[in-house]
Image (tube, rainbow, N blue to C red):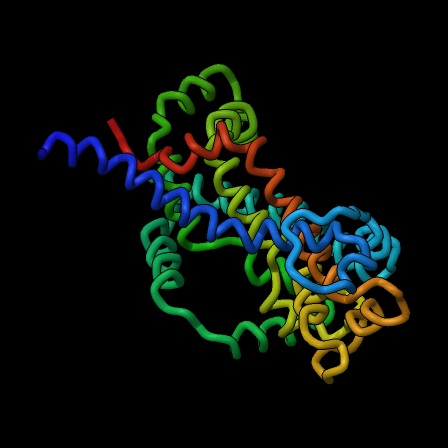
Length: 291
């Protein structure tokens, strides 16, 4: 009896987890289905799990509008340029803090640790951005979040695992500090850079709250802010600007446009994971165990 119960438990476990997985994936599947549904079929109403009339009309319309293309390009700029800048700053700061010869090393580490424990809130960052004259500037979405104290501490743990003998050997061969950094340290830290680069890219691509605070010009909205305004009823005051212009003067149902916009905003980051999966799996563990 006990043996049969043990044999049935894995089957029951797989069935329950499969059902939970299907329930979780169904909303995503429905979003994709509606985005490819033809306007005429959608207007018939009802729930369709597999439409008979597929159409790219919603995607063609979105990709032909200036507002949507501008928002996509801004989000792409944030994801690419912001990630590169953040990786350079984070890696350089982490490496410097991992070398014991750095002056005031412990004091700087303490200050970085304090930023992970205490959140300054909303007002101080806004005042800083305003005083730097970055309101309505795309750089306001990059410079205030250029690095993370938590990422610096984690990456420092990786650099701590690199022995000093490598640097000493390179110096004996006539390599200077920049040569050591570019020829030895960065190649060894590719798994760590890939892991943190993925974190940064997702965060920049999904930039929303800081854009709402610092960007008042609707022509400079990133994709997530434009999408949020599209999801709001365009007839309300909150759904104005570029989003209201995008949702009017067209014969395509607004719901299919919203679903297509959600798919376009989701797909780029999903494509990044397979290319970085090899380095990501190694990078998230690097520096955590020292032998």
